[in-house]
Figure 1 (tube, rainbow, N blue to C red):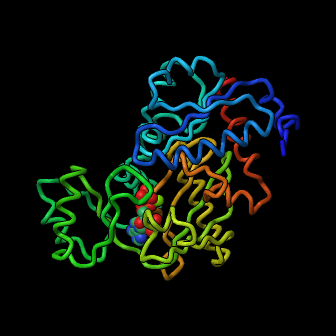
Figure 2 (figure 1 turned 135 degrees about the vertical axis):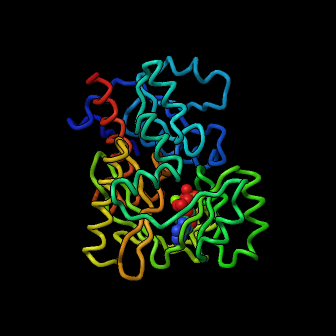
Amino acid sequence: MTKVLTSTSKFSQLQKIRVGVVCGGTSAERNISIRSGRGVLKALVESGIQAERLDPATKTFWKKTENFDILFLVLHGNGGEDGSIQTILERRGIPFTGSGSKACRKSFNKLVTKRYLRKWGIPTPTYTALSQKDWKKRATLFPTPYFVKPLDGGSSQGVFPVEDFKKSAETIRKSLARHQRLLIEKRIYGRELTCGILAGRALPVVEVRPRRSFYDYKAKYTRGMTEYLVPAPIPRCAASKVMKLTEKVCGAMGLKDFARVDFMLDEQNKPYVLEVNSIPGMTELSLLPKAARAVGISYHEVCLTILAKSLTRFQGR
Ligand SMILES: Nc1ncnc2c1ncn2[C@@H]1O[C@H](COP(=O)(O)OP(=O)(O)O)[C@@H](O)[C@H]1O
Ligand SMILES: [Mg+2]
């Protein structure tokens, strides 16, 4: 059924524009990005907008961008959330949705993000960085249990818990050989939460309950492996703290239109920010659209809101 939402005054400026939905790319999250892109494209077309899918991994990508008024970016991981495509688009004056290159660059590198969080007094688990040179000493001195993660990436790829350094030393060494640098971070026990933001306002908090030891790749992308509760059944003051922190983090990092912040809530209901996603999953089942639905914002409206916000920003220049 076609839902022509663009005829409503809120979205009427979208009626005549041509939108390129950019998804795919070359990162490890290519397949997820294609799924997100498929959802966004369907929502735009069903809303009466002229839209087409574009993949930066194809040779004709840059030539094709000339056919559109704005690009809706749904690229995850390297080449999408790291600010690189945004840098080129800004240089060429091509309008696009979501955060600018600087905000993406800051939020993509988990170590850089954590430095900013510290600077703004936003709670985040204690951490240290490992490099080839001194990793053994640092990883031994850091109290277990902790999580090891690549500085960039997503979908939990390369993320693993360590309980005993000696047992995990070889896995850390191999991971370091692959990524050059790693982040290690105190493991927080408690409940896992995530909070999306849309047009500057935090959406209801989602609790993520994986049936595995943590929210790893399998738990993220295998049906039935994780339970999602919206709004999260946590004390009201904890939920409001998480929502306020989400707005603070996104505001401070300069993130625009939409983003998602991942948290752990410890046993004393204290929230800790784990990381920030500048282009979170955008399939109809993804967490940000799920949270929006809980406050009566449909998937189609989420996509149109992002588009309308970005368009207004570029038109105002
Ligand atoms: N410090 C931590 N304490 C507890 N769990 C963690 C911690 N860091 C990561 N995790 C677990 O690992 C998952 C992936 O980590 P995250 O930092 O969000 O990276 P990604 O960018 O891959 O999503 C989280 O969703 C959570 O389940
Ligand atoms: Mg995450």
